Length: 195
Image (cartoon, rainbow, N blue to C red):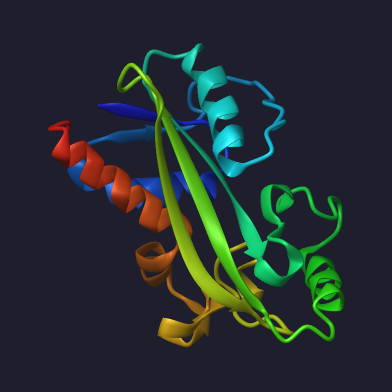
């Protein structure tokens, strides 16, 4: 069985492969299939953006398509940057983004946040399947750790007393928003006898 991720992001491919290799499922990206489309994320929620990506790619391949939209939601800032996480301060480094976020949180005691991941799966059943994963944490005033990517260095995960950037790949996969969503998807596949 082959699943196509509606992305060319190698980090995402590696994360999905770490879960699906034991089920003999090959994970492909758009790059692997020579699909070169730029899907404009015009939705107002993670779910809408995941659907836009999945439905676009599902028209181009017979394989099961998995689209993911995810981002950081800082609760005291009305879940900002949310769906704009990747596009927030586009062209700037993440260190510059961290400074801006901390400026926005100045004089605010609630630094709670979550990473949210919504998967939209198409070409498996008649209707799209949606699965969500969330990881709760706190935004730090300074970055810690060298692993991971994006906002990982300022996202402190209390149960492990580390930022996502201080976790090993295996540790992060067990507790991350995407990891939790993938595990729920695997459970769904088992319940429906696909695995």
